[in-house]
Length: 319
Image (tube, rainbow, N blue to C red; front, side, top):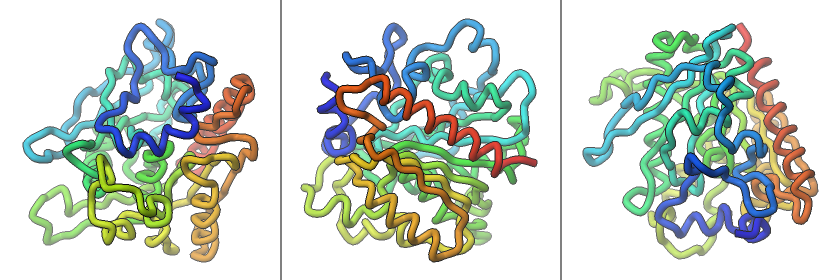
């Protein structure tokens, strides 16, 4: 597949497809024929971890945080073996709001930057199309964060030092976590709903922030097969207030899938509310940080974004 097509379709086409693989098969890497990365990750992050890297983390696999229509909702935990810093970063595993599970041994390379700095990492999965839609994903990740906070100490992490990070649809869900958090409902039927899902810091790559504007008159199918009236109820732009978490947004100025205006209006709303935030725009980058015809530049941007993400969490989640 040509990456030019991917850059334009990664977001838009995923909306209409029932399942998108976000994790590569064991024998391959998720890179295009041109060698440029997908989903905003550097090329190095999309291969399999080296033997030495595999020795840097232990896993807690398939933790069940809830159920939807009888199906388990799960996450995987990556615990650094050395110099754990007590902070935890949740990665929203979501491409076009489809959440494709992958073995921890295959996903670890994506999190190695964080693991090497002592962060515990959680890969959080949610229900996906064609059976479920974006509002379901929003409900799932908000519940998942409650479970993660409640059990953070079991993973050697501080529940007061949790950040969230994601790209594209995962960026949207990360902003949902930062803007739609609460302290729990003491009267909730589900005991888990009685606990907080607040996080301390957010990083979002090229995120949708206003679904009403972004989706427009797209036909209702796949993950967007839900009532238009619900769009505002799951759009972070409508929930910004002074209590929101410090937020770093990184976007491409040439993104045709999720226009950079989505990030710019979000920054304006955060500024107005007095929320600490930063917006980094790479003018030449499209969706997934793709720069047409220049895989080296694409990879350089993805690496810079990764380093910015790690630095943000080092600063905001420090003890």
